[in-house]
Length: 197
Image (cartoon, rainbow, N blue to C red; front, side, top):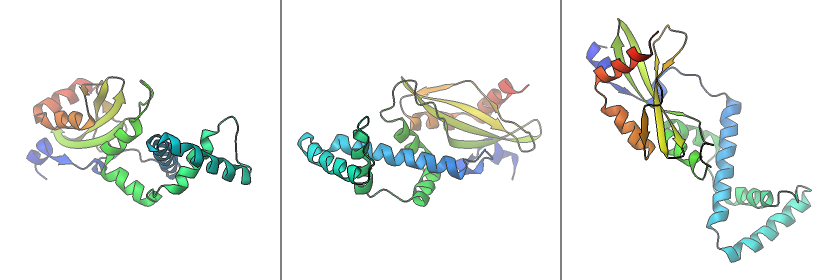
């Protein structure tokens, strides 16, 4: 690959070497996704339909000796999990890899301010600097007033990544990605120089 490609190329998020989530971490995230969807279903049901649904959920939980009087809504969420046609784990994992921005927005939906700080790798670019190839990875997370992002730089053969401060603040994660993509190669190189030791 020539230098021009490294200076301007966009790469898929999966192309950047990064710590992968373990199977247990992915399954925990999938379970959180399922529970969010079930909780949202409850908010969409007409109020007069929630009570009979809750009675059914409570009766089923009592039959299984799984009803918790300190958390009665849990039975309702468990029933909604059975009713919803959610994707199986493998399909969800594939969608997470292909659509990280959508999953990031989904995870932040309804979160209290300052509680959702998980950043997600949403785009990468490559550049050449000092005779080495560098990957510039855009990481985005939700904040109380919108979406923020930072760039993490990694070069093959270097043990650790270097990252900028939070340099993006936009109303949507797609807007953050668009700003990142609008940077000229010399702008990315300037950010890299700012974090190099």
